[in-house]
Length: 470
Image (cartoon, rainbow, N blue to C red; front, top):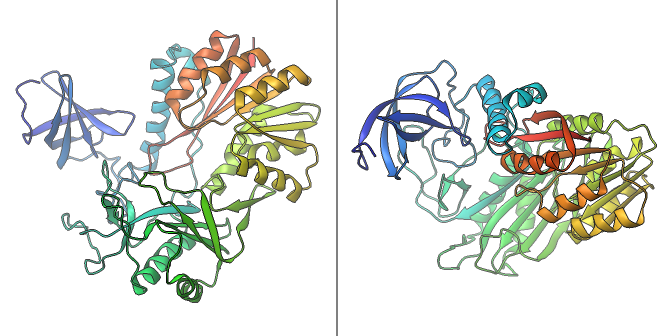
C-alpha cells in the first residue's frame, strides 16, 4: 500500500474512470479510486479506505480542473446518492457510458476489441436531460440534516424529511426538490411531505421499527396532467387519512389517485402486499408512442417516456417485422414492448412471472384494441419451453430481464428455441456481456449494439443488442 495511511491527503493525477464513474489515480503503483474526480485533473484526495491492492479517497480539492467538468445544478449533489455524474458535461457522460459498455463486452464477454468497435453504435442521448423522471419513491425519515458543505441548505426545524439515500448510506439527504423529476412529481413530493408535517405524521425509524410513514411515492403521466400519490406505511391505518386526502387535494388539483401501501415487515423491501385506495382512481393512463397503458402504483413502467420511444424504435427496427412473424417477449411486464410491436407482427406472445403485470398487460391489449397478443403467467424457462414444444417456430425473440440478467435455464431454452432474430434489451452491461458470450458460443452472431441513455446524470446505461442465428 506504498506506506499510505487512512486520512492521509495526497496530490494525485486522475487518468481515467471506472464503471462507477470514480476517478482512477495511481500512487507509486497503488490504485486509488476518487469519486467526483475527472480524467486529466490533478486533485487533493484524502484516503478513506485501504485494501491490499486498491483504496478509496475523498475528493478534497481540484487543483487542475478538467474542461469537461460541469457545475451540478442540484444543491445536494455532493451528498445525495441518486445521481453520480452531474459534474460531467453531456459529451463526457456519453463517452463514459459508451466506454462502460465497451469494457464490459471486452473484459467480461471476452469479445475482441475490433469486433466490439465495429458493432457498437454511438449512444442515443436524451435531448433534454433534466426533469425527465415520471416517478419518484422517496424515503421518509426523522433526521438531523447535513450541515456541512457550502451549498447545503435545509429546513432544520422539521422532524419529517424526504430525500434519496446519501451515498453508501441509509441516511437520507433531505431535499426540497430534484432536477431529475418532472415538475409535477416534484410538486407531488413536496405537497405530500408538507401535508404530513402539518398533520403531525411520524416518520418511520428503521432501527426501532417505529413510526408510520416509510415512503412517499408519486407518479405522473407524460403530459404531467394527472398525479398518483401513495404513502407506504408501517401500520394498516392512519388516524388522519381523510384529512390527508382533503388537504392534498386542496394543494394538488391534478391528483387523481391517493392510496396507502402497507409494509409492516422490518425490511428494505419498499412495498408490502396490501394496497388500499383512499380516494380516486386506482391507476392512470399513460402512453408510449401511439399506445396507451394503464399505470398503477406498483406497475413496472419506464420512467423516461421520451427516451422510451427511442428505445422501442430501436427494438422495432432490429425486429424488422413484415407482418408475418411470431414474436415472443420474455419478461414482458405490463406489455409495453410486446404491444408496441403488435401492429407489425402476425402474433405476439408475452411471458411474465408477476400475476399483476400479466393482468395489466391483458387489459392494456384490450385498451389498445390488440386481439392477436397473448400474455402467459409463469417462469420464463418453463413457459418458453412449452411454447417451443407446442407452437410454431419463433421468428423474433426479445428479452428485457432485470439487472441480474438471464438465468442459465433461460439461456438454455432460448438456444433450444433457435429464433431467427434475438433482441436483448439490458440495463446492466456486465450481465449483458456475460450472457452474450453464452449466446455466441451457442450459435448466434452479434449484429449491432446500441447504447441508449435512459438515465442522464447517473451511471446507468441501457443497451439493445441484435443477434442472428449463424
